[in-house]
Image (cartoon, rainbow over all chains, first blue to last red; front, side):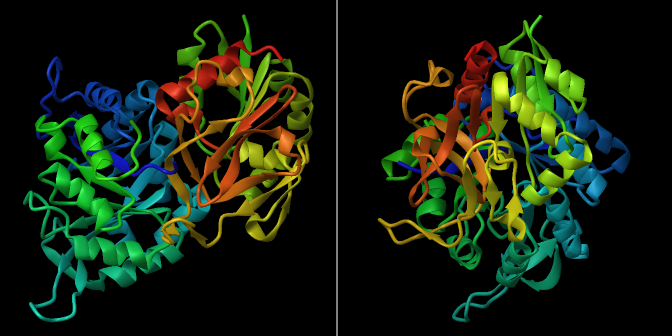
Amino acid sequence: MGLAKRIIPCLDVDRGRVVKGVKFVEIRDAGDPVEIARRYDQQGADEITFLDITASSDDRETMVHVVEQVASQVFIPLTVGGGIRTLDDVRRMLNAGADKVSINTAAIARPEFVREAAERFGNQCIVVAIDAKAVHQDGETPRWEIFTHGGRKPTGIDAVAWARRMNAYGAGEILLTSMDRDGTKRGFNLELTRAISEAVSIPVIASGGVGTLDHLAEGILLGKADAVLAASIFHFAEYTIEQAKRHMQARGIEVRL
Amino acid sequence: MSTIAIIDYGMGNLRSVAKALEQVAPQAQVLVTQQRDDILRADRVVFPGQGSIRDCMRELAHWNLTEVVREAALNKPFLGLCLGPQALLAFSEENGGVECLNVLPGRVVWFGELCDPQTGERLKVPHMGWNQVHQIGNHPLWQGISQDSRFYFVHSYYLQSAEPSLVVGETWYGFNFASAIARDNIFAVQFHPEKSAQAGLRLLANFADWNP
């Protein structure tokens, strides 16, 4: 009995539409964020994360409407990331019904932004997203660095030190993506996940690389993550959230069923 | 028509609370309001809140709502959510110590450095996610909700009731803390029913029907 480990499906949204297709049986419109969010809720998702990948800032307002619509019909926590750069961006998303916002590039550009956002809106709604990649050679002490621009641009910032700093600045949670695993279906970078999770006092969500249900369980059991986030294994109906939870439960992990 | 007033004093987004109540109580009028008269005239009152307790008490005073909240808590069905129940107690450790409304006896305490006594593993703070609530007694607001159902929590401070008889729900996070307290017309929960899927909606529906 106690706190459940969470499973969080992540949806990429471009100009108000879910992209990369979601294959549910009986779903009419695979691009409709509301319909998809509702379906994940029914399957037992513990939270839903929307990543706004809209390129033009003119279309950002669309995301606010998406959040409003989803939050009026789906009563589980919602996180929104992508393009959150100012306190006003945070306020608009929270007012639209998001419970948390995820801050990535803007934190690297100006770390104080995280402190200001946490002070203004409370730690509980500020997630710092960290995209990290291994930079050590074989045989060396492991070291991971923060990358931006989809993993193309190194920043020189050590990922573990950065996570500690964001914790101290008031982040309520960390969303950690192992960039060298993202899209590979080879599983989370467990060494990185564990190093970050043990370095901070706040919850860590593991992301990047999930291809099997065992990967999800390993993120919790070996990576010491508090939650696991995945996109494609759920979107393409390889597994339902419920299957994932039953599998995790069979491996001794506490889940909400 | 019955009215439910959600007290809006600038502490967190109340849209989700309003939407969830509208969904479960379509016959009621749901008002998000900072108007004294609306609150005192409403049939039921919801006292939510998010953020820090210092800001919460400051904003209540700023909007002249401190006494209104106390008055509403005296007689009508009154539901505290998240920071709401913390504000109802006498004192909170947060922000170096803050005097609260003292509607119910007790104090609010930081989780601090926590370990699971069984595994020795460190427990993260905030306490964030879905945890079980063990119902104590047969309060009408638990009607139709299975024992030990999970609700969504996110908080770093917890309620320490001065009177054990007020505790109607307990949750384990390295130790048992009060996740729901009640007295007479007041029911207050540390978790977020508006974000707790079916169990949460049922609790809100029960509140909309509750006649203490």
